[in-house]
Length: 109
Length: 109
Image (tube, rainbow over the protein chains, first blue to last red):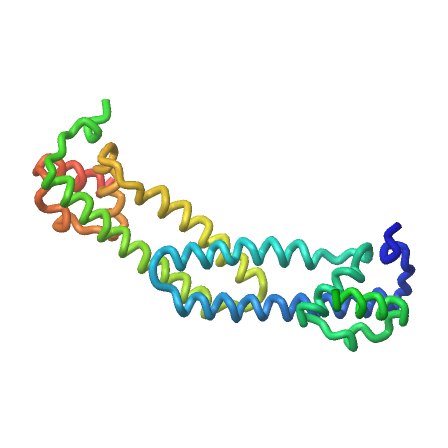
């Protein structure tokens, strides 16, 4: 049984979740832009260009998959974002203590 | 009947063709690197990053398709490279006058 999927979300919690999600997404995009600019400034032969293309293919796939907002499973997504330092637990304040405890615990896995 | 495919190529002509091909390839890669660096310096929101990814996908497909060295059909490839200013006719000097005339004529199509 998927406990996270059965948690109830108040309107207020959903707004907090959406805002935190948006914050993490913007950080991920900013990190990606910085990475691309760094790689672009070091381009040399054609293999480095195709390596940048491969990098973008993977990042696009990862980001588009990760930032598809759905409440189902979102505690896991938040945990992974905390683990990857794209989100801080404090930015999820307002969620129930139970949800925060789950996110915190999973982020340390 | 594909006239270009049936032309004979001396060893000397093949060496000239390979060198010209390499020259055009290097220019295409240099142009691509400059384009990527320009686009990277102007990255903003996520859509601009994905636009760069799409650009690289198309360029990779185009370049890998275009620069597959085969004598068959190479007069057409040279004509398109001359048309796109990645190669100058003078860089093909040493090919027979007949081949040069074909390349020159096709490059103006």
